Amino acid sequence: MRDDDKIHYRPASTSADDRKADGSSSDQMIAEGERPGLRRKLRHSLTRRPGRATIALASAAACCLGLVTVVELRSADEASPTGSSAANAELLQRAEQESASRGLARTPSAAPTPSPSASTAPAPTPTPKKTTPTKKPTPRKPVDPAPVAGLTVAQMNNAKKIVRTGHAMGVPRRALVIAVATAMQESNLYNLASGVLPESQNHPNQGLGWDHDSVGLFQQRASMGWGTVAQLMDPAYATRKFLTTLLTVPGWQQMRLTDAAQAVQVSGFPEAYAQHEPRATVIVNAIVAPAT
Figure 1 (cartoon, rainbow, N blue to C red):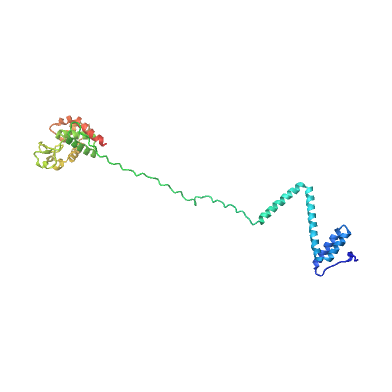
Figure 2 (cartoon, rainbow, N blue to C red):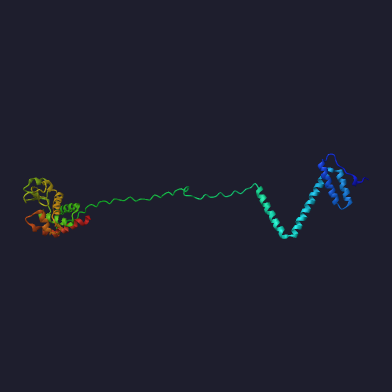
């Protein structure tokens, strides 16, 4: 038999680096072996199958290194249980970080919600207010009161014309009472033409008077400058003429009714107007009250 301790087989197909690595690994494993028979079998297997021997040696070396590492870790854990727990926790944390950094899945972060600003926020739309159209007050029609104070319908209608004309002029109520009382004395509240003045009879009238050329409700004379016959036969014109003259009388409001009327009419019976004051007041109140 050959002496295996003196045989050194080096295959031609193995490179210099492989031969160096195989020789050093083989010598190390032979040195670590405990029995001479194991060394001879190992050398015999290496000389017969050099390629497989190289793979086997590398696997054995890796296993040995792994066992050494496990033994060292277990010894360190047994020596310091507190330190091993901390080390394991650190290793787990690093593993999680590396796994997260290498992973392909990513959880998208929530996009920040833009805060509304005055420049981007839409301006509030003002709610249109419902406006109720203002209704114009309907002018009240004058109420035609029934005749009062013993007057006929014709007399009451003439009294209304006097009061409403004076009211339109804005004169005080006292002036209206004076005007109605004067017409009651002069024409008994009838629009009279003159029997001696045929021209006056051509206008609407309610009878004839015979006091010279006096015509109308106030028996005014055209010959004295009060106006034309046609104008004096108009109740509204005749009333305006009387009240305008009354307002020019100084202190007429403080006078007795008969004195104020006489200052305008210059009648031959100056005290005759006073008797009509009570009835004239009732007539004016009945006409003015519904209109206000």
